[in-house]
Length: 346
Image (cartoon, rainbow, N blue to C red):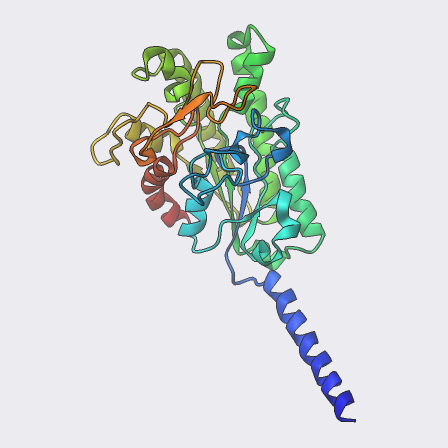
């Protein structure tokens, strides 16, 4: 009888313990963050099996500052995703790709961003923005996140220009068609953002386009001293269209969802151009990790396993990590500019 009583007590205790764990996934009071976009936000969704020359974020020297090993982040450390999560006093959301291996992190949200992706398909076999939102919906349909859970969340949508890069690769006369392409791009982006509204996400932050013309990919030709102005015009038009879209969403919004245009362009530009009051970087245009030639990238190895890149000794002195991505210190400096706006919005 005593053994039976103890077994019964254990079963009851186990039941309430499991119920407690189950409810923690659905805890409406816990802040959650859902992330969509590309390599500026991806914390581990790009497949390592794609190999070093494509998924080099999974190989050295990426992650050398944090967490001292590669984690799929295209940087030496933390990204915008990590800084926004920290500001929200929550943990960086688990990448969708490894969601089954970190169930204890599910209450903090999920990251659907994948490097190389865009609003449209970019030819990289990556989930575009619509597909990422489909993945989000699938998690809701599966009961991982309830309606109450979604009501206590914020979404970060990061767009960094992969659509335009893909257009340039596919169309030799892309400059003649970029305006028409941009119209289609923003029409689709509006559809995607309205889906997040329909799902019930109360706060949606969307980045504008960073100063692509100042990335080392384009400044290398001038020994990292000049930002080509022919590219900046397209960036300006994109960001003007983003302003109009955000205004349109606010005017026609009949729901509880609020939208914020996150001005990463100004955040980056202030640091790169050493605007008074911004964080100073000794090397605002020179990348910390540089390919040995124009045809190689940070992390590349030759057929014999020799490094085809060099790494600086002090990443914190550089704004850029590789040819297009900021260092951890670069993201930290940019976030200092963005923080007051995010604080007011959230």
